[in-house]
Length: 239
Image 1 (cartoon, rainbow, N blue to C red):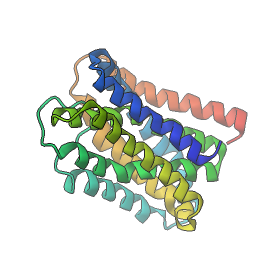
Image 2 (cartoon, rainbow, N blue to C red):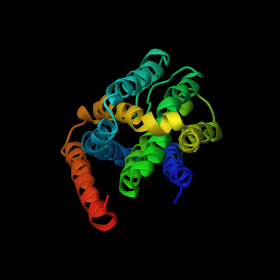
Image 3 (cartoon, one colour):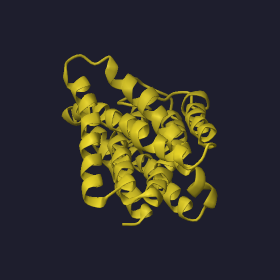
């Protein structure tokens, strides 16, 4: 499959997360909390064990690009965006909160697409792992945007519409990477910084305060799932 098709497939999870909120599914929201933890474990593992080693193997200049990706997401989501956190919004917010959250998400979702395309350039196995990592955190993205829009008093249709914007940014990132030599050289390193930030600063804080064993079990389960997926892909794809 092409990078753009994989990016579109991953972005479809944005709509699934938004639908859970729009339909008022409390059970769906609880499931997504555990999905956040599972996705965080998977993402931290793929960054540490696959993305960073591959990026540094390409040359000694990868470290600044990793840092740049990390800092850029913090700037977009927590400096330029006045109200942003992953998970369901339960308090009333201003009408512009949903739109600003989309702006904050768009940079990192663009690099979700870059990650998938860059991974496929290295090997089919790495591309598949990065597709899974992106797909797993698309659910809370859609939930975040839709819940902010509804909490600001806007319509369900607008909530669903804005939830599709991060999905489109992901497809755009994959498309641009296929035609950009610069992103083909440095995209994996930048995406590693972006993914590390999203997992460590956005996802993990969302479930750390939750009671019960389910979130931590899901988090470590995500790491185990990565190890199993990586072993299977290495065994059957040789990558």
